[in-house]
Image (cartoon, rainbow, N blue to C red):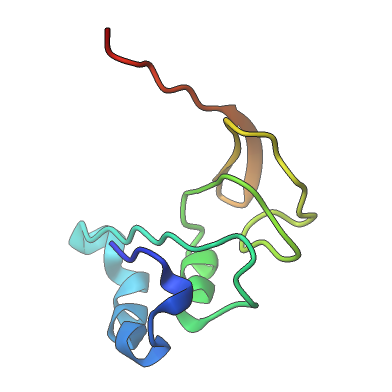
Length: 97
């Protein structure tokens, strides 16, 4: 799990890039969290896109890793991207009583 990928040194993530193509066979999962305004593609993000990774994009800014035309989404909405095809998703948070 990589949180705030946009502030992590890209060289420290490079060992993961080589594992992405065989991740499914190894039952290896990569969870990548990044700000929607992150500049451009990096090698790990590109590797995930190239392998058709499942993605949940909460909001897009100028660029998106998975959605062709980035849009601004209201709170609670996201795109679920499966094999490059986005579907609109509504997220909820149930509060405990």
